[in-house]
Length: 276
Image (cartoon, rainbow, N blue to C red; front, side):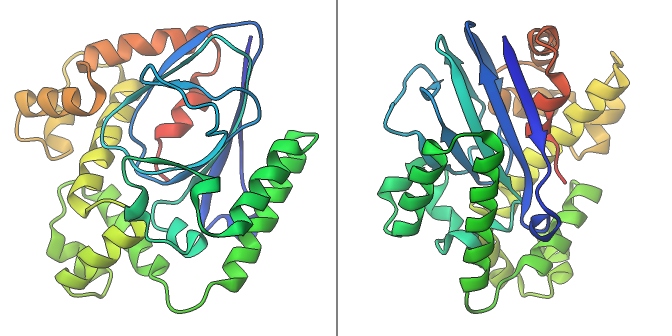
């Protein structure tokens, strides 16, 4: 049995946290492909962690998951109880106090962070008696971190840039910098520090999801209009880039979602991959 739930953050944290993702499994094996999501996450495994791409480190039961540019495969044959915090792409740096680029393509255990507050949060969440209490502890922690944060941040400017990227997948760097009221050089530096990848890398992930979301909704066999709508030069370019990110063709990916549908958690699974 697999149970999964999306929990919306409290109103005060909605400018920073996209959602919480809770999964529990019991007496079942599971294997899923998780696409790049373009945001930093905290992952708490209150039981045995997943195998990721065929390997597992059971000590990593509370970690910071940085941005990946390729799909990963998660699997388990054991019971799972997992809570994932999905931050808005540009909001985690002010909470972490560490540039998000430091976590790119990496999974860093809370115990490896120099800040003892993260170790305390890990202990409290893993020892807590319920999921609701875990969420309360996480929210209290994030609010305290925000109150302690000093200096300027670029959340508003980057939020504007992301809105433009969603509306115009092939937007150029100079337009993004102008939307953020920064020079191109400053925008690129600020973007990488706060998001964890370059604007070009994030655009690649975003347009992949915009295209696949439309494919899922329209269920059309002819995807030529989707290819050009989201800034791909042609069908070959779309297929090549899709395979580089997903490790499979668009048709294979859509077929792979059938197993998710059979578990009855398709909308919740897709919450991984839908930008706010």
